[in-house]
Image 1 (cartoon, rainbow, N blue to C red):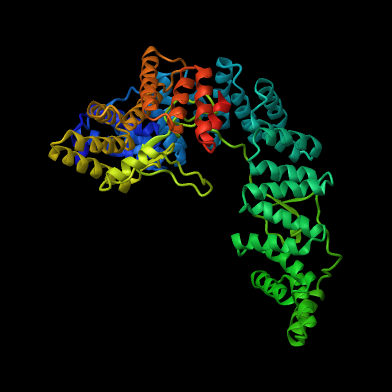
Image 2: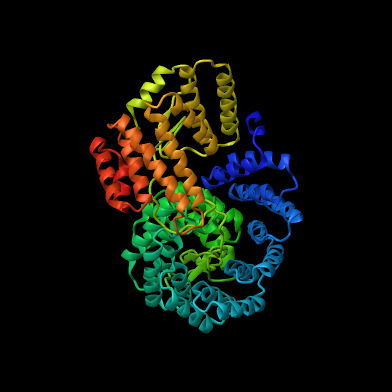
Length: 608
């Protein structure tokens, strides 16, 4: 970590924030740790380290760092907001409410703070306070669709479905594109057995959120109660495609398969359920019946026996096991079971025709009444999914669009591995550089550098220190140039973009006929632009000027190496960032003409 010590605290914070932006949370913490060691009385490094810890799911650590930042400066709204989120993740709802109370004193118009505080009230079952705060919110923000959805949830908790439906309809009038609202409306109609209405609402929810498993499971319930068995089966199949380990999907599909006579496939579903929950008595009983029916008598006896050990007075199970024993010629064991049943029959008649799947009745998952073995199962509680307002997950930026450009190709020491990606970027310039400097770690080309863990971070800082020592001992400029490039790539990997740019500029001063330093310098400048653009919807003059220098670097690189598809692709990205779309399309097309397998060029050209 000696390489960190040379930077002043402001520089450490800048580089650490760069790493935060690019989701290198472990790396960012190394910079913030050093800043804290240097100046523990500044609140910023404590706060930014809390952001990193939060994104690494260290919620206790994030809370502690926020508390330290607040003790230094108690007037920063964002710190209370982040600590509130960390406390929510630990189910400390009262403490989170206290944080939101304090934050709202400094920023009373912050809708996110109001939103999260209401959700904490709901978690605490403080419904009256929640409704009061929602009234204030909906007076202040009359077109806030999520506010009406939260209001509906409170009404549902208070068992007032009429008002809940009214609030949900209001939410849908304002924003008909929120899947959770349609799902909530469907849940009310399912509870009222309005199957057709529920199915239509779940159709809308699935259209808006096609990967939500619960929507398919719930629509299956609506469909089975309209005798749409094919549609029901399709929904269970889709739910299990999305979540292959879903308990309810396998259990209910197993029941449905048994209903339509697909016994062997039903057994497979119950096998899976029992793999997830080996002691689930309802699945055991259903599998026992199916094994019995399909002739696997020893398997059926095994399952019946496990049930009888749990429920010694399970007379139906005893009778069924006795039947299996008789068919296997195990008369003694059969007679023992039959005698136990006979004694019970002296008191009570137990038997009638075994019922078929009862579609109109649903069993909660925790209900282990064996008489309900053939009822479709639902989760114990189906609550609206809480969506806390959170600007601290993922990149610390303002997300203005859902679809982003694929990033530039850059030089790196490693690339993110993919199980499905077969394309390996290759450039002759990079290959020549590697072969001309065989003692160094080889460079590669990538659009995605993997996030660094603590060990990798140490490795890169050690590499920077080693290359710096090499440079100190080098007397020849020509020998220094490749070391500068390698150190620049290491700097850019640890998000120290400014030092990377300085090394690349020094390389160009030594050798202006190499395309590589122009290429990598353009990439580093583009990363700086990404960070400068955080939260800004308009392009500033400073960003425009930097984009001009990026394009200039890439033009020089292309002049030196006109057959590199990656350089045209990168320049196209820069043109697109300047909204010069015709030039961007031309460059993407040139990149594709050189390398027809450059998928990112096709993708980005499609976006512009």
